[in-house]
Image 1 (tube, rainbow, N blue to C red):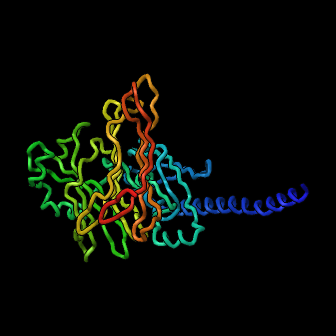
Image 2 (image 1 turned 60 degrees about the vertical axis):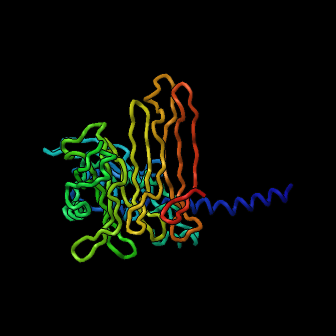
Image 3 (image 1 turned 45 degrees about the vertical axis):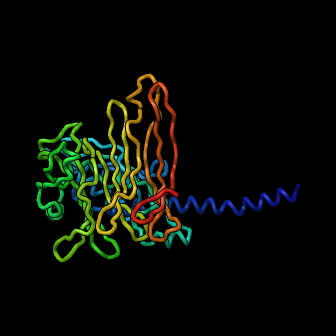
Length: 368
């Protein structure tokens, strides 16, 4: 018995410093993140406070526009400080202008302790975790499209692949009730660097009439997109998909560039909608492949009953998310798709909760 007690005492002596080290590493990581946040300067962002709550950093302040707040979130993400997302946002009139009062949450990046994982992610500055949520990544990057103004260069490059802002194509007939004319509106852009090359993602709407005349909850636009390569002072189309599919009728979709391999990037799209409480949610991953921006992964659910559909029955929250983590392929990470939804009706439904692993092969993610 004495031997057992002595043995347990030795184990506790061994573990105590480890626990202290973990706490110390967390404190240091948080402290470093706060220092970096205070060093970020923007004339369009006014910070009121930076505090620590429940292991996360809470930032409160004002932005002179939603676009500037989106850029600030993106800067936090890209600078390696941590994963940032919006907790609260409200428009306020201040000094004769419309500012946005915001509260953000930032989870500081974790340092990799595993040598193999560190090597795998050595060229992945935008990936603070080995398994990264696509939804949270896009939430930290993208404001509502209503407030985003696409640059002239991006607009010119994007409209160029359609031959202008008015596009005639027979493929539009199956989407626009026989009409073969579409109006092109660039709506989102993001620059990134891949293997030392400067690139540009542009996404936009294609609508059967000019965008200013085509806005209601049921007015769903088509989405098109392209990745351009910087050449001289201009942009050259590298991967194109003129019709990706239907977009989001209320402009709350999230879009952006994500890392899907140590040196591989892709376009992620999160689109959600609801009709009388029945919810749709979908994540698409578009991968450049043989000159086209291919939909390599399309995961989600359609018309599943949420809380608003069932007044007398409490329904569990529904979601779709995709995470990437190292797999057997050294060039592309595996994709883990998680679906949680209510299958059936308010009177009779079955809760579905499943996670499926996909591996990239021949331009597509396939279940393994």
